[in-house]
Length: 248
Image: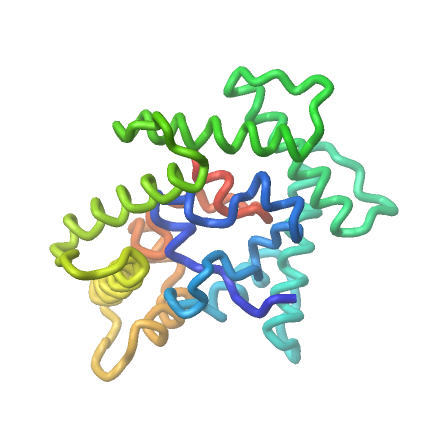
C-alpha cells in the first residue's frame, strides 16, 4: 500500500480534475482516495496525518496504537462500506476491492445518467472513461477552455492550470518562471498561513505542515464553520472517493 496521505489541496480547491482520475484509473490499482498519493510529484504538497485521524474519529475508528498506514486503510475501508450502504449495495460476504468497484460503478452510472450518457451494455471501464471525458469537457466549456483537438490529459492539464492561475492571482502570487506544481504548493502554503491567522493561531516559528496539522487537530470545527482552508468549498460529505463529489 502506498503511504501517501490525502492531499488537502486537491480536496479543497476546485481543481478536482488533477486529483486521481477516479474513473478510468480506478481499474488500474483501485483508487484508494484516503491513502493513495494523488500526484506524480510526491513531494509537491503538504500531507496531513491529522486529517486521517480526524476522519477516523468522525467514523468512530479507534486510533490509539495504530500506525498511519493501518489507520488510513481502516478509514478507506469504512468509507467504502459507508458509500455502499448509502447506495443500497449489499456488503455481506464481499471483499473491500470488490465492494469498492461496485460503489464506483454505481457512482459512474449515476453521473452518466446526469450527463445523458447511455450505460446499457457498456463495459464498466469503458463507461468510466466516457463519463470522465464528458465531465472534463463540460468543465472546460464552463471555464471557456477550448476542447478542440485536446485529449483527456491535455484537458486535465488545461483545467488544472486555469485554477492554479486563478488562485495565484487571487492571492497575489507571482507566476513568472514557476512550474504549476511549485505554484500549487505555494498557494497551499499561503492558504494555510491565512487560515492560521484568521483562527488566531500563533504562527511564529511554525512551518506550513505544522500549521496545517494544528488547524485540523485543534480548530477543525471553527475552520469548517468559517469556510477556511483546508475546508473551504467542501461539502464535507463522507465519501471514500473524495474528489468525485467536488467535480460538480
